[in-house]
Length: 260
Ligand code: PXP
Image (cartoon, rainbow, N blue to C red):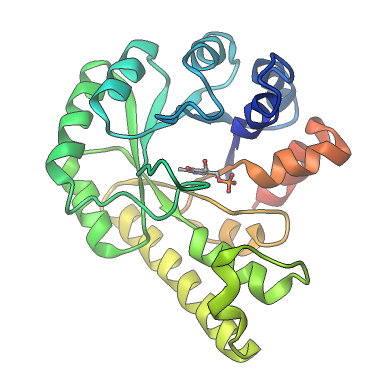
């Protein structure tokens, strides 16, 4: 199982002071030496963490392939085409969200996504679509002619956190926390089965399958066991742990959990 380390949160820390420290470029060699297989970054429309110049420097300096997440907004696609990362992962984006909530609307926005894909293909950039784990989304992705889909693991991760953590949680947890444990277990099982089914189905259609969002040192193992998923993209939990352990240990501990 390959591991993409999402280093956006290093830039989040920098932006807390709007200075030049810590520099996400400094993470590249450490991630590569600690077992990461890919660097993932998200160039958001609001540039709240990674800036254009970060993306340019990271793509230029990275010893690992760079997976650049972006929206389908034409001005962003133009920038991505000129940056020429190894891969572009198209994600939905809302300005007010804290992080990417839900997958792309690959059915409703089919034509807009198709336009973005055409431009990225002309720039010879590999393409992935960040989608919810449903057969309909996978069929639409296959029709769109991309090489990869990335399955959104956020629902699984949220439910897992509600069931297993004693920590207070965000707004996501208010409803389900009222549920009895057995109901939560059933819901986790349902979201997990949806991921297994979606991964197997995507693979059967010839798509490569990645997964990510909300994965951490507690909940990642069942996802690693889905053998049709070949890559995980993980950010927040690795950067959070690195505050205490250092980035090298945080990455290599996660890579160990990703081994099959
Ligand atoms: N994959 C995609 C497509 C994402 O948008 C994100 C969040 O930027 C991640 C993976 C990583 O999520 P997390 O930071 O929760 O590990």
